[in-house]
Image 1 (spheres, rainbow over the protein chains, first blue to last red):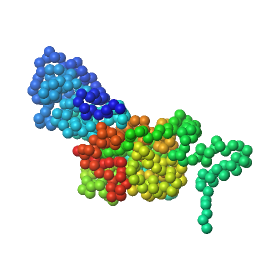
Image 2 (image 1 turned 90 degrees about the vertical axis):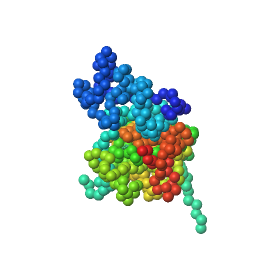
Image 3 (image 1 turned 45 degrees about the vertical axis):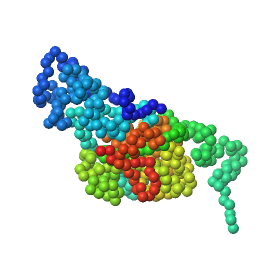
Amino acid sequence: MPSALGRHPGEKIEVPPPPFTEGAFPCTDCHDPEIPVNRTRRPMEMAHAEIVLHHDEEHRWCLDCHSAESRDKLHLASGALVDFTESYRLCGQCHGDKYRDWRAGVHGRRSGEWNGHKTYLLCVNCHSAHAPKFQPLKPMPPPVRPEGLAGRGEPK
Amino acid sequence: MKQTLPSRREFLCAVASCAAAATAAGCSDLTHTGWFQSRFREMSEAEKKDLVAGLEKSNTARFGKEVTVGVEPPMAGAEFGYALDISRCIGCRRCVYACVEENNQSRDPQVQWIRVLEMDKDKGVDFAHADAYYDAEQVPRDGHFYLPVACQQCENPPCVKSCPVGATWREKDGIVVIDYDWCIGCRCCMSACPYGARHFNYAEPQIPAEQLNPKTHYLGNRPRSKGVVEKCTFCIQRVRNGRYPACVEVCPVGARKFGNLLDPDSEVRAVLENKRVFVLKSELNTRPRFFYFYGL
Ligand code: SF4
């Protein structure tokens, strides 16, 4: 039985593709490495205007996670580069407890086989990296009350 | 004076012999399906095979698509457990409807195996003040939390003890199952279950043919008939083939965890070992295999 968990170091975790905005990736399509990087913290106007940061916005901004040198990658606090498919390593730097729970299967959602092959959702498949709070949903309809069930009481 | 009554089997066999005599046909091939069907639990593999072949044929004809009826036995070394994170559940009821579709519950009259209870944060887990009929534009609603309830797959199941005909029992992998063909519809199990997990088909269950899930198990989601009791089986047709239950895969907040209690690497074990866990109505000593926990 293959170990189902990503608890063990170096173990490969299968994840779905990161939820990129259409046309946004690869970043180097627009971010030409020749153009000097503007490192000033500022609201996005020319591009990415739709991104309004609600994720510790007082302290963070784009280049804390996105690499300015290798545009198609993220980076850890150490400077080590990380692919978008492994963004959980980046999230896990601050949210260590959630990262631990996610690897154990306690946080997050998996599909597949309880005793075999599983797919994990990435953090960003549920939580937008730029505004991670989970959004409320419209609930599905409530059940019919017993008096309303077919075959009970007066015919409708 | 002590009287000995014929058993159901003896009685039916006697009737069968009369019928056989009348029609001059042999009765040996009639003894394990239809009227003369014995208990599923006591059937030989060959009898089971015959039985499901018949069921597949009649359901395929009825729904106009190929229906399979599995009889997969418990897997060796597996005992199932479930854990639900009530600090995450937002009460969206996606699980309720995924369950209805997967398990072929009647659409009309409505049968739903999962009931999501809305509770007051101030009151805590309190069934007296729970509301299953909440409706809202958005959930979660302020000041509330949500507690979905279905069969708790008790290790000490009161429903099983209450069944006068032995139509429901606990399997080796911990799933409490019902033989719908043996159920007499007395509903003793429904009153014995402290969780309201069992549901009765008061009328002929209606499922539009195009919505029928054709992959079924004899002890699980195969189409039922009027007058029998049904309930959650952890999606026996899925989990005995290694898959997660449907509710686990649909829950948008990932509140639902399922796995093998005997596997120290399973998600449920991680929950049991690291989180604050409780079971419903523990004072009744039913020993549920369905756990609730606080993941936050
Ligand atoms: S799908 Fe998940 S969040 Fe929605 S009611 Fe069911 S358990 Fe709760």
